[in-house]
Amino acid sequence: MNETELSRVREFRQLKRAIQGSKTHLIVGIDVAKERHHAFLGTADGKTLLKKLIFDNTSAGFSELLARAEEVRAQNGLSDTVFGLEPTSNYHKPLGRYLIDKGCHVVLVGGKAVKNNRELLDERWDKHDTKDAANIADLASRGKCFYYDTPSREIEELRDLLSLRARLKKEEHSLNLRIRNNLLAKHFPELDSFYSACERETLAIVRWCLDPQKIAAMPFDQFFKLVAPNARGIAQKLRVQKIHRLAHESIGCAVGCAVELQGALLVEKIKQVREQISEVEQATQQLCVQFPEYEYLLSIPGFGPYVASKVLATIADPWRFESAKQVIRTAGYDLCAERSGKRSDQAVPVISKKGNSQLRYALYQAAMVASTRHRFFIAYFARMLRGRERERGIRTKMRVKLAAKLLVIAWTLMKKGESFNPEYLYLQ
Image (cartoon, rainbow, N blue to C red; front, side, top):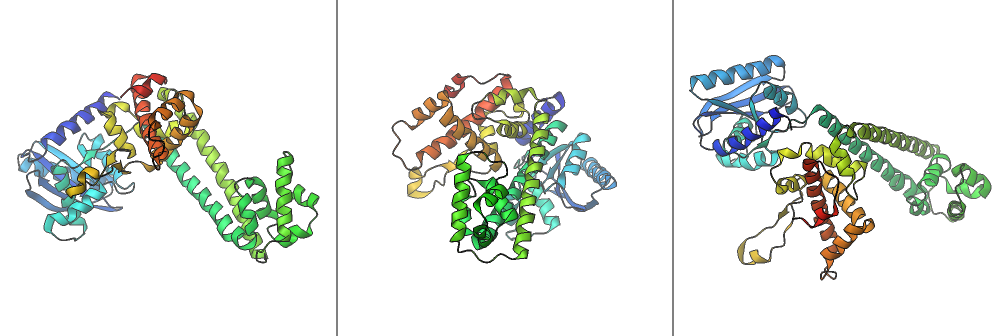
């Protein structure tokens, strides 16, 4: 972490301790929008100084905000100014970056906290921009805020690439469902069971000859050459033979020109999306190799290029976390339970799922691979299960626990600049 960022982290930690009830801090709550922002200026002890300030999402608007905040601060003899923002899509980022570049204290207030606190202000659920700005200021004045992370440009690019990959994977999944649920289920339902096992041949059928009647009327050699021009073995030929036999007995509906066109377009689209995913993954790997931490992450069993890049993008700088608990909370692997009344002692904690869901999924897959393919992790996982093998769902629970441990190990390796050592498995 560079010295400027380290200084910002220290100032934020000190601010959270000092801001509650402070008589020296000016709190500026900003309700962020796309074109015009609403701001509320007040003190940490609840005094309103400027109820409503509307400024444009432009350089001139940002300058007006700073000028008015400085004017109010000087008039009331306050020493520090804190700007609180609610993260709204990407609209808050230009303003947040501008304020940070000007040396201002900027904090973020969670959207759920804003929603829960709205009714507490006046015992009414009444939402509008002016009240939301006051709501944000109220939360910031009580220290109910979190650090505004400003990673390096390379980390921002890595996060953008991973976000793009996630959107493309979602689009790929959507196209697969459209093919299976809209086309195969209606016109050739017997083919759906082969989709995962021989996807290449199935897509070729959807692209060139989805109609089972046409397949049945076609000689097998011609059909095989059409859907599998590059034969890869006897197993492939046997699968295609089975599909050809099923076409004679298919219960599918008739296929018209519209369905044929739809199938051709969907297959071409899914191929295009997969090429884009491959291109994004190559760009991601080229960017990751610039970070020395990437090599340390790849040394962890179960960590492939995607998992390593996801952990690297999320943690970014390991020194911004004070403890392993903070890292675990980032992924949403921290345990929570509803403990109330006579049965509070019987409450079963579960993971909060409040953090990064994509990171949780990636770490769970890494735990799955490590616990089934790496000898140190197989032994460690067996030790975790010992005496609890008959409990329902225990393997999933222990893999979640192992995933959280993998995240802590990754954070530790990034801090120490070391490759994986099996001894880390047994450290608390």
